[in-house]
Image 1 (cartoon, rainbow, N blue to C red):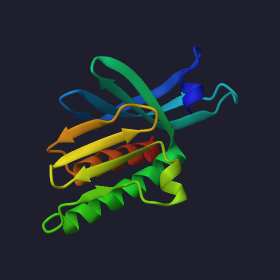
Image 2 (image 1 turned 120 degrees about the vertical axis):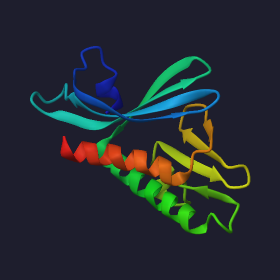
Image 3 (image 1 turned 90 degrees about the vertical axis):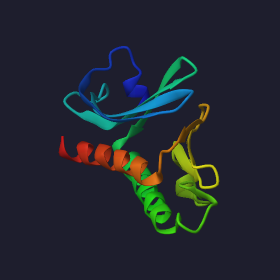
Length: 152
């Protein structure tokens, strides 16, 4: 998806902003979209774009729908686990489990209970930190994007 989305001739068939999260240093805007497949006329590539702004610099990360579904399942488990244990455990909750699947995903999130900070780590980009943003709120954004990809 990244190579198709970033070509000069890329044609976005539809796009919808699903959510935006803000930090003191930047933001991440999550959008579901479909792009005309330049390799196969009449086909489309579905996925998610995360438009990052950090210290005034903008960049985008594209994740195809299949990989995004796996990522969303990790994020939902993370949000559910945090909701069950947050009252008594103040460590770090992470979507980056020590398995092959987690290690190959393009991003992961941590919630640092001692500080109440959510960290967004996107491979190849500087991390963003968000205060007062809980794992269930992030999981809801990713779930909405996943549902939008399925229904459009």
